[in-house]
Amino acid sequence: MDSRYILEKPLTGPRVGAADFSCRSGRTVLHTAEKSGPVPYKHAMDGGAAAARSDKVSPKRNGVSPGVRILQDVEKNGLGDHRDTGYTGILKRASPTHCPGINRQLPCGFMHLDIRNPGKQADLVNSFRATQGLNAPLTEKQPLPSTHIPVPRNRNPSGHADKEVMAATVLTSLSTSPLVLYPSSAPTVPEPASRGWKEVLSASYSSSTSGNWSWDASDQSVPSTPSPPLSNDTNKNFLLSSQGDDVNEDVTESPHFMFEDPIPRKRKNSMKVMFKCLWKNCEKVLSTSSGIQRHVRTVHLGRNSDSDYSDGEEDFYYSEIEVNMDSLSEGLSSLTPTSPTTAAPPPVFPPPLADVPHSEHISVSASQSHAPTLLSQSAPSTLCHIRTDHAYQGPVTHVRTVSIGEKRQPASNTHATVNKNHALITPAAKSAPGTRKPRGEAKKCRKVYGMEKRDMWCTACRWKKACQRFTD
DNA sequence: TGTGCCGGGGC
DNA sequence: GCCCCGGCACA
Image (cartoon, chains in turn red, cyan, yellow):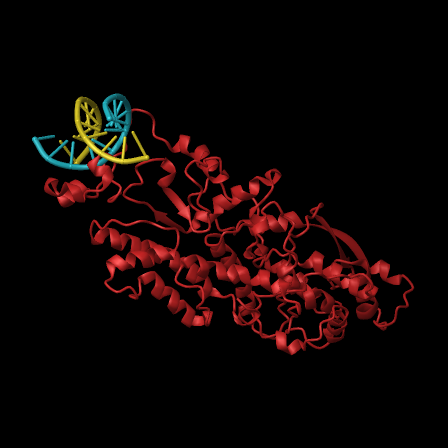
């Protein structure tokens, strides 16, 4: 995967659909094969299984299995020429999640500046870019979709002017709010913007079901959490207050929160101190005192914003307010895509950084054991139910739902967190001893093939076990 | 009575 | 682990 691909690939819906379709299509193929007759087959975790089975279902080796065709269609629909991944669905699904990570590795990382706020912030923008050694013209970067926003990996504010440091601080603190991301004052269409976070969400969501990765769910403080629009009132307040010149520093770079650090820093304190302008009819809220002072000085006191002179009068026109960032996160967490099969919804919202597949995210330390738990709980939202005729045999772990992104554990390795969760859930779901599960409606091998074709039965039926081929 | 399949046992 | 079967519950 080269950088060209990264830059040209939009992380949009179709890609998400690819993951989902490939998974489902794999299942479809599976069932088709099952229904087509008692063809013995082996299962694999990826789309290759579908292709492999298509060898038997379809006379042609190159015959396009449904799953493969869907993948190719998806590519036509915007995934470009990413054809080097072969037929396997895993690679296809993994591809989107790799993009951001590689983006961060781009030597010429850039910030996706909000093009809807041109003009005044240009100077500040250029200042920022200059300090980061970013020489690429801004216009080259702007066409990128908002959901795909790489940023410089190592931002070093040291040596910057106070203004720039302050701007960075403001951005970090405000980045939890989508309100700043997509100000209503923007002349451009807000719809793509609102769709942006949705896409990020869906991308993250679907990725969780596909790639071999996890997010560090223990990090609730990720400032990159994209947020659905909260209350309109809040929006108004924020947006109204975001039209001043100070907003530029807030708005201009806030998108960088999307992909800040691979491992975002924790926020120790959920209470965020903000500074609210007390000027009549002005509800501007900024996260830094200097910012609000400058706002008051320039907007309300009519002083030159470039002038560093301040008599301290601005102090009278703003006050500190505390904003509970957790409350925002909680509101967001309600949108967390959870699986109906999960025992409990993840307590935190998966940050979009989870979009980034990082092996270091997978290997979470034991002290963060809840992270894999979250993965296991949220991942199976789109599952490929994989079973075999021989699933009945051997360890029960052969018969279980397997998410695409979930690494298959050896049968002997029942200590995995995923299996632990199953163990925790299973006893409650297990029927009481002595009770039988109701007889299924589906015809079983015995009825389908009859006694004379007993060799065509599934193994379980032959052994008088629960039929594995025609399950209910 | 036929069927599905649990539980148990032999190898 | 593979394979078989007695026996029970259900339609």
